[in-house]
Image 1 (cartoon, rainbow, N blue to C red):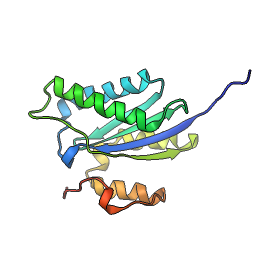
Image 2: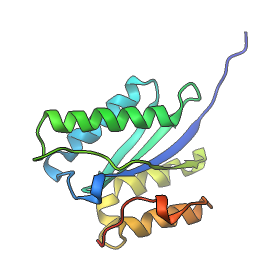
Image 3: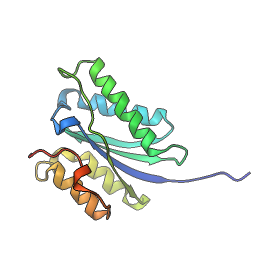
Image 4: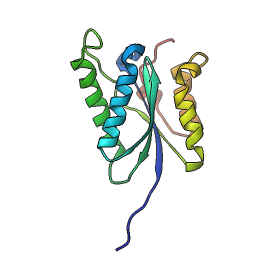
Length: 154
């Protein structure tokens, strides 16, 4: 019997509700490791998870056996619960609805990895809005401004 083989590389970007800088540097890495654990537990490959105080980038080796929307729903729901149960913040932590996802070929994986690894440095020069709109334009994704993340001046 023939097997099914694939290698799909996806970068996913999503933001904290209200774009608040809530992912505190003192515990952010713990949350990113937790996200990677969720991805792995779902049978997918977490290549890198990183971000800054108000948004996250996941780079995933995705198998076609799982819908990306189900994976991201589980990552968001479980990390919100993780953050809230540990009382990392006052009040309730939530992610904004929606996400962006962008596919890459194998030859781009090193560049994408380095880009995600260096998010803090990158965002010293570029706002999240600029970054996200650049992704949408570069990947020629049609969008309605009305349905993008809640933007606040950085």
